[in-house]
Length: 212
Image (cartoon, rainbow, N blue to C red; front, side, top):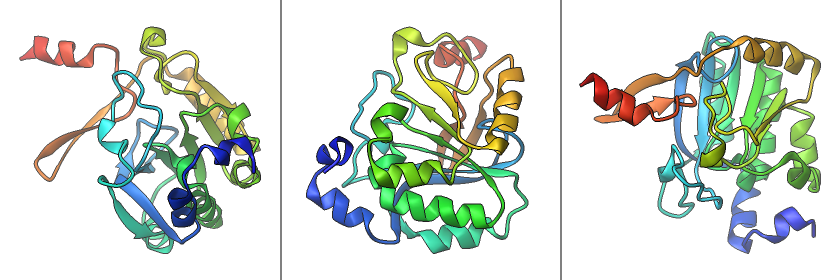
């Protein structure tokens, strides 16, 4: 068994073999997590527990999120006028069977794909399922969030994280990302709660309080 999967419990592996994906939330349109108009989906479940994580509600695999069929996600995507899809979390690669099915079907819609992971590329590539995922996405942004390395770099939470190009289209996406000078976020009110989309500027909460 590859080292990456060896750290997972049996329940997780069985769950991941189905066409269901456990997600925290999705956003039909955003412009702050990659090039153009994008659909974003946040997977549920993460073992990293990074200090000052932006989405701690995504940690618990058992109590948070909801299950949806991959085909239902694809059905939604097929009706949208978008340039690409960004997949974040939580940790998408904890559900790598479902993730593989999802990215393959997204590619059939001719959309580019950016995936965020708290694991490093070197850790992920030890698993054959993950290798196949890499063949079907354009950019991987890897590495856990480290608060002390947060220098307000666009698109990454901390400077240990890498923008890894995995396709020709990925080069074009990376060029766009490299041109961005500042982090940008969008604020969405969903079910009475404020939801922040994007990688927020450092000390955003303090800055917002200063405006009030």
